[in-house]
Amino acid sequence: MLTVLPDFPFPATTGLHLRHISNLELVRRLGCYSALLYFTTEEREPSPQQARNWRLSGAPDPPSVESTPLARICDHVRHGGRRFPHTNFSTASLISHKLDFLLRGALGLPGKRYPFSMSYDRIGAEQAVLDEAQRVQADFVILSSMFMHYSAALRKQGFQVVLDAADVLSQLSASFMATLPGRAGKLGLYANYLACCSQERIFVRQCSELWTTSAAEADEFRQIAPGVRTLVVPNSLDETAVRPARGGQGPIIGFIGTYSYAPNLHAAHFLAEQVFPRVLHEVPNAVLRLAGANMPESERARLQSSRGVEVLGRVEDSGCFMDECAVIALPIFLRGGVPLKLIEAMARSKAIVASPELIAGTDVVDGRELLVRSAPQTFVEAILGVLQDAQLREQLGANARAAFLRDFSLSSVEEKMRCESVLMQQTSAAVHKDVVLR
Image 1 (spheres, rainbow, N blue to C red):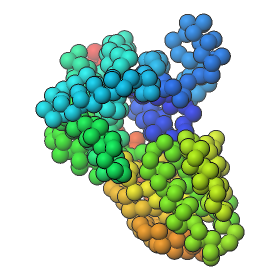
Image 2 (cartoon, rainbow, N blue to C red):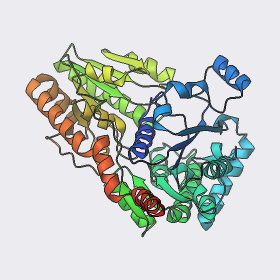
Image 3 (tube, helix red, strand yellow):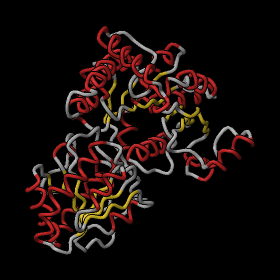
C-alpha cells in the first residue's frame, strides 16, 4: 500500500494533517505493508540549518521523519519533492493555466494539470508517484482528491487506486465562486469549476474505491461515478489518545481553525463582531479565544480591538486550548467533509454550538450531542445557555463523547473498514494464497 500526501503530516496543525495521520494508522492496523510518499510545501519545511544538513548528508528524507510517529506507523517513507510555490507562477503562466482549465473543462477533455494540484503537477509529481509505486511494488495507491488525475497512469501500469476524497472539488470551487464578492476573479474561479467537474467525471471512474468523510459526500460521488465502490471513512481520532477535557468552567468561548481558509476567517468575524458583544452584555467577564495559524495581521488587529477577544495564533496543543473553554463555537457555513475541529471537540466532551452545514451528513442531533444554530441571535442564546447551565454543559459533553466513540473513533472506523473495504479483500486473498502455496 502506497499513500501519497501533498504535505508532510507533522506537526499536525490542521484537520487535514490529522486525517492523513489517521488514514496511515488505519492502513497499519489493517495489516497492510505501508509505504508513504509525501511532498513538502514552502510553509512546512525543515529549518534552513536542518535542510542544509539534510542535503549534505544525502539522506532520502528530512531528519524530522525519524522524530515523528511515521517511523512506527509506516514501513517505508520517501520524500517526493517540494511543490512549486504558487506565488512563483508568472502572470502569463497563470493566465495560460486558466485558459487551459476553461477550454478543457468546457470540452470535458483530460489534462495534465488541474486547479488544486498545479503546484505539484509543475514538479512532475505524477511521475514521482509512478516511480515510487513501482519501487515498493504497491498493490494499491491511496491518492488525495487533488491528485485524482494521476489514477489514469497508475491504472495503466496495473496499480489499483483508492481516492481519499476529502472534498468534492467541483462543489468546493462552486462554493468559493458563490461567496466571492463582486465580479473580479470570478472568471478564474469559473475556469477552476469547469476543470474540476471534468477532472471528477473522467478520473473518479478509474478508481477502485472512494473514501468520503460523510454520507452526503458519498451520495455526491455515487452520482459522479456510479458503480465505483464508495465508503464513508469519516475523519477519526484515536480514542485512547484523545481523552475528555478537564476544567473549562470559566466563561471562555473557543474557536480554532486555519485562517487562510476563508470560511474559518468568516467564522472568527461572525463570533467576534455579531455574537460575542451580545454575550458580553449578559456575561461581562466572558472571553472569546480565537486559535489557529495564518491569521493576517490586519485581521488580527481588527479582531483584537474588540473587548474580550483574544487572538492566540497557532497553539501547540489543541487539547490544552479546549480544556480551558466552556463552549466550542463553530459557525462555519461552508465546509468540505466533517471537520476534525468538530470531532476533536466531541472527543474531548466539550459543549458545542455549531452551524447546520458543519454537521450535515452526520448522526448527531441538535439538543442531544450539541446545539445547532444559524443566525447570530440564536448563536448568542445557545452560548449563553451553555455558559449559564453547568448541567447542560456536562450532558452535552457526555453525549458528544459517546457519539464520537460510536462514529468517529479510530476503532469504530477500523471495524467498518474490515467489513467493507477492498483493501481487506486484497489482504485476505494474499493470505489465502500464501497458505495454499505453503
